[in-house]
Image 1: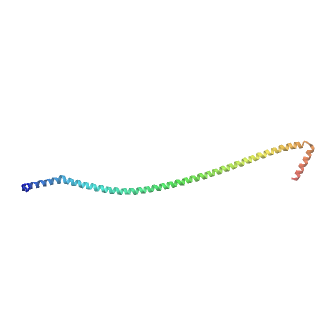
Image 2 (image 1 turned 180 degrees about the vertical axis):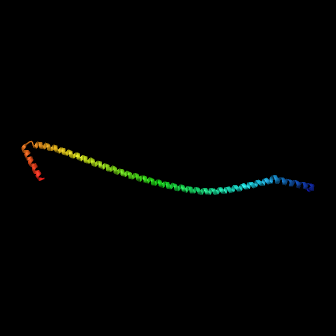
Image 3 (image 1 turned 135 degrees about the vertical axis):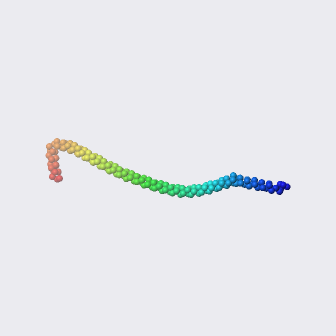
Length: 164
C-alpha cells in the first residue's frame, strides 16, 4: 500500500525534483522556445507587412505601367500620324514635281515640234522656190528663144505690172 499512499518524504522529494525540473525547463527550454516563438511571430508579422508593402508597390507599379503604356500608345499614335503626314507631303511634293516636269517636258516637246515644223516649212518653201525658179528658167529659156515670143512676153509682163 505504500504505493497507493506515498510517504511524506517521497512527496517532498518528488515536489523538490518537480520544481527543479520546472526551473530547469523554464530556464533552458521554455524561455528559448518562447523566445523562438516570439521571434517567429515577429518574423511572420514582418513578412506579412512586407507582403502588404510589396502588394501596394505592385499596385503602384501596375498603375505606373498602365500610365507608361498609355503614354507609349499616345506617342506611337502621334509618331504614326506624323509619319502619315510626312508621307502625304512627300507624295504631294513628288506629284507636284512630276506635274511640273511633265509640263516642262510637254512645253519643250511643243517648242521642238514648232521649231522642227518651221524648219521643215522653211526648207519646203526653199525647195518650192528653187523648183519654181528652175521651172521658170526652163520655161523662159524655151519661150524666149523666139524673138516674137520675147516681145509678147514683155508686153504681157507690162500689162500685169499695170494691173497690180
